[in-house]
Each structure stands twice: as structure tokens, then as C-alpha cells.
Image 1 (cartoon, rainbow, N blue to C red):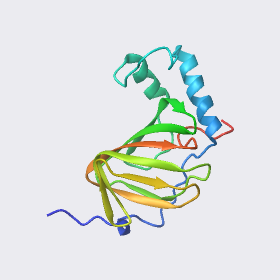
Image 2: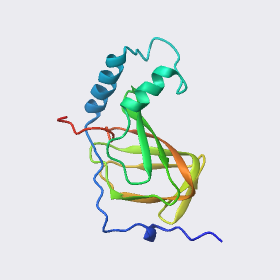
Image 3: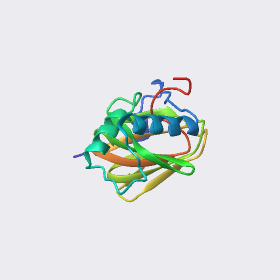
Image 4: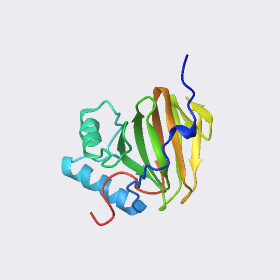
Length: 160
């Protein structure tokens, strides 16, 4: 029998401040990584399996993520959004936090998360407005998330 997963599973005393930098910082971070290895995202179709994409994944890996998570920034952006992939281990939790530079959306690709006592599974999504605190717990089988943010919540601070 599986344990019940609820938001009460998150320790409210744990303080998590994501690296939340302005959108422009994310543009610079992507450009610097691409320039360093000579990658032009507009030169042709590229997939996550390409060797150059694997190098960029390592270069754009998250510096500060909650325990049990692996996150990386994709080496591209579209007007108004940076994109990220995240893998969460079973039962990992994201403590309450907000993204104060912009809104974001999370798409559940595989697995599940529990938000507000509701299980979101493959194909579900979660929109988080700028400055709104939220938290969630990963389901029993882990999770793969695709996210888009109007901020750079991955990497060094705006002054780095």
C-alpha cells in the first residue's frame, strides 16, 4: 500500500530561495554557453541527443535546486520564455518559494507531483504567477517536468 502524499509532507521550516534572476540574465547565460562551444541554435535542427546539446546540458545545469532534483536550462529561448527540464526523485519536495522576476508554467511529462493535495500526472500542467508562493511533492514514481519561465531560475545571480 502506498503512503498518502500531501502537502503536509513538506517541512514548512525548510527555507528554499531559488536563483531567480531577470529574463535578460538567462539570455546572457545561454549566449555565453553557446558562444563558448560555437553553437548557433538557428543553424539547423538540433535534438537533445546531439553531442553539442549534451555539452550544453552540462554547462546549463542548475546550480541551486532542492534536494532530489536535477535541473538544466535548454540552450534556447523564445520571446518571453526560457525553458528547463527537471527530474525529481520519488517523494522529493520543493519547499514553499516564489519566482519574483516572472511567471512560469510546468508541464508534467512523466510521473507526477502533488500540488494542493491534487495529483498532477503526465499531460497536466501548473501555471505559477509572478511572486506567488507554491510548493509540491514528487509522486512515488518520480517526475520529469518541462518548464517555461519569464525569469532565469537556473544559474548564478544577476551579478554573477
